[in-house]
Length: 363
Image (cartoon, rainbow, N blue to C red; front, side, top):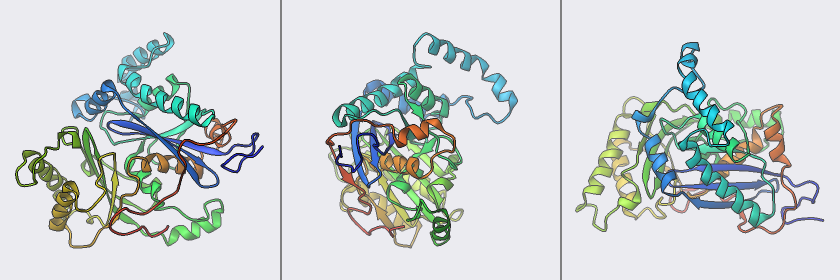
């Protein structure tokens, strides 16, 4: 029997990526014929509160990977308490419980609608100072899913700037299954200074990073910014000139971008993520951002704004497909982990580019 993705009943081929945003989670099922199926679940109050708290420096603590043996020793009590909770069948922490709820709902929704079995996946997240690798791994373990690490990625936690880049096809070779051709193509891929803007109902996050490949992300603390009081839900029904909200938002843009001026190359690529990302350059949020960018950089921007709600999950699944870890059982399970695939709820081919401004280079 053949199914819509072109696979047989015995040989379904798909890769799975989760993205956990500030207020919601999304999943992408990437079939090998290029069809991508996406779903989204809005986080409950506990999830949104958890993500907001994990953005605060006051929530930071020791966590693996450790810098040295001393850190490992100092973190023993926290690790012990988490292991005891897991033995009792509980999530490793309350934070893990909140995160796992969204993952579980996404999994159940997708498996039910597509009649597939998801056994493992990679997970991408915003760069929150207190959201750690063990939180994501334990959340996946709690819902009985294998956790996939992307081979060659510098940090095990996939941050949104990397997967947003990949979701638009940037920094990726065309002949990725041919190592020699891919290496040759990679030589011609330009390095970009990328501003990633995630605008969600409950948060604004910013990242400015140099990227040649999604695997090359380097994003120290001073190159990303998160604020859980500047989401679109706080946006008033007033003009840009009348509202304190817009003044505060302008200050946030200027603070983040001006501190990079003269130190780092200005952005020439802009990627929008999030449910509240502007659909037009004429929306107040976009107008305000562009007015600040005009101050700090003279060069024109290449803008990517297609499907901002799901593009990070698509990029996560794309990296699973292209960079499976060698001898990784979880990764191998994703490649052929589905069964009894039937009609999809949502089928979306790769649609890279932008709803306004310019299209991508097709790399």
